[in-house]
Length: 151
Image 1 (cartoon, rainbow, N blue to C red):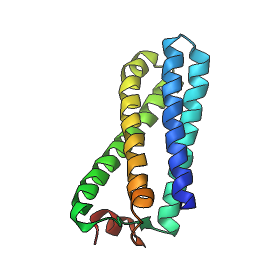
Image 2 (tube, rainbow, N blue to C red):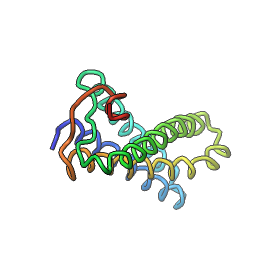
Image 3 (tube, one colour):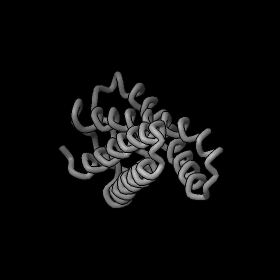
Image 4 (cartoon, one colour):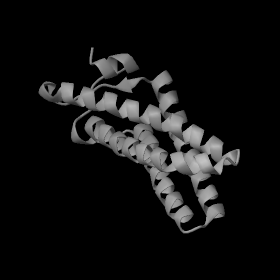
């Protein structure tokens, strides 16, 4: 198993688990525990992002190494994951900012939406990890555009 992708995937899964715990805590009315848990979820997501960007900048990304006949499906799935992850990150920053600015009414409305997007982003991220490193041997490590577009 490759070290950096495994560690970064761990942090994104941890962030999703913490979001789920935080959601449960606020339902139970435990606002302080919710806040602490969600801050930890954000830190975990930030650690993922730092590792991912550093790896991309210094090492590159791994292209799909599985069978050519399913590469197009993987590519479509990867683009879907990237869209979810980007949307989830933007929603996450907005949701946390609203909470820290004490705009709780709006925070309550978009928090569940943010959480669901984040869960799907984490799940699809784990699936990308599995496709690249566990189910199939990874392809070449190359620039992000080449890895995404398969050229």
